[in-house]
Length: 147
Ligand code: FES
Image 1 (cartoon, helix red, strand yellow):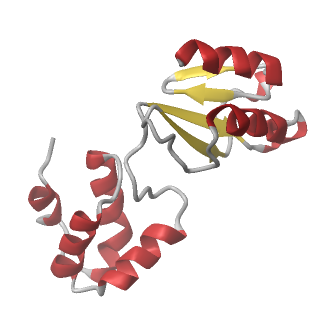
Image 2 (cartoon, helix red, strand yellow; image 1 turned 90 degrees about the vertical axis):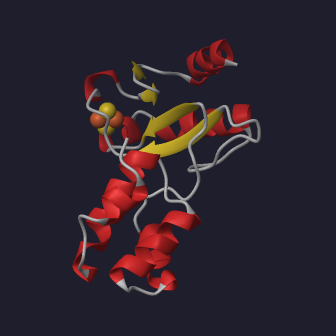
């Protein structure tokens, strides 16, 4: 794993901001305030601007993910097969919304576009495993097995 200082050493220009934030997130899993302050110092970009970019793009996370990452596909194929109902079921079971983490740190919910399994829509992905052809009942059973 690279340290934050090793990552920062590869960037010197304001135009590198998105690439730099991407690499920091890839290495650390999220963008901490401490690391964004270091980005501010190295690139000479005000912290408010660094935060602005980090919060504008849905792919950046400002908090660490839970132990299990649940991705709900909201791509077109899943959308037409009622992905919204699947998302709602997960929200009800876990008490969290998109991009939130349960209080016990076990689950993070993340709505994404297409996870590449459209033929089995609607789909979710928990960690590296895809679950397809879901119904509310199936998704309840799957999540309960993780709990
Ligand atoms: S749209 Fe959901 S897997 Fe492609």
